Image 1: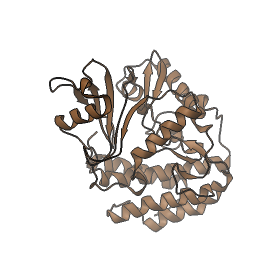
Image 2: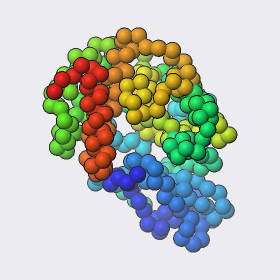
Image 3: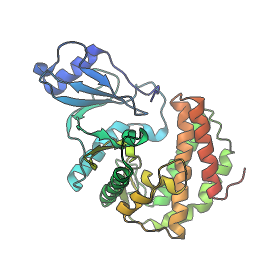
Image 4: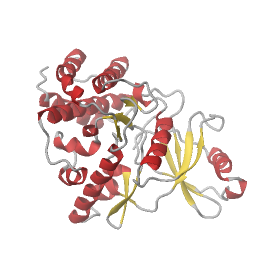
Length: 328
């Protein structure tokens, strides 16, 4: 996917990064050692072949001067913290981190190298029709199970991993939702709805968020495209940058409960261990769908995405508002 946030680097800079991370003996010959992986929306990502033939992955945060959403500042540092937490607290498979650089002297952003997982991107293979239906079903169930294991981590507060922390989930969620609406207003994004109406719709239902009393680790962005598949099993979960402490019901695998353009959540729900939703859970889930819809719409401007992407996101917000009884 194309986005102005992708911080592509010259061959010379990539060589310097390899030397710093792995030593001069691992700097490869020629100019064909790096292949950009283009399916992400935010960071620049390269598959890199070292001198000895080992393949690794380089991830580079957006350029310093490119505007991003409020909650996207320092996302790479959040991802590194999330990966460390997942590695220490669970057995969920994630790539090994080889080197982290936060100096900004080789380029104007944070970057890190990690293990290359020799597997197929589940979401891409599924979208291309390369997987049998029973394989897709089993993989979504496995993804739900892994997601449940991640949610078992209990945090010290609600909100971003590194803070600022909130004592209640309602405070954390409302603050983040207001932040996205503010981002949209600053960029002049047309939501198709009055901003005050969208905020009031959220706040009119926000009392159900008080039912969440324990901050749990939430991946937020664990779509099929952020998992790697081998022999019908998920062998790695990737892209942990948006993780926070909150309510597991906001996980991406549940989005299909509300928005029909997203995958059928039935197999994910089996693995996740959720048979059905009570009234509070149903409303909470719809609030998270509204939150996601606003993000998807606002970020089309920040990413300078296509008019088609904007129109699609616009439609998702209409659906999300309707689920909560919102009226223009």
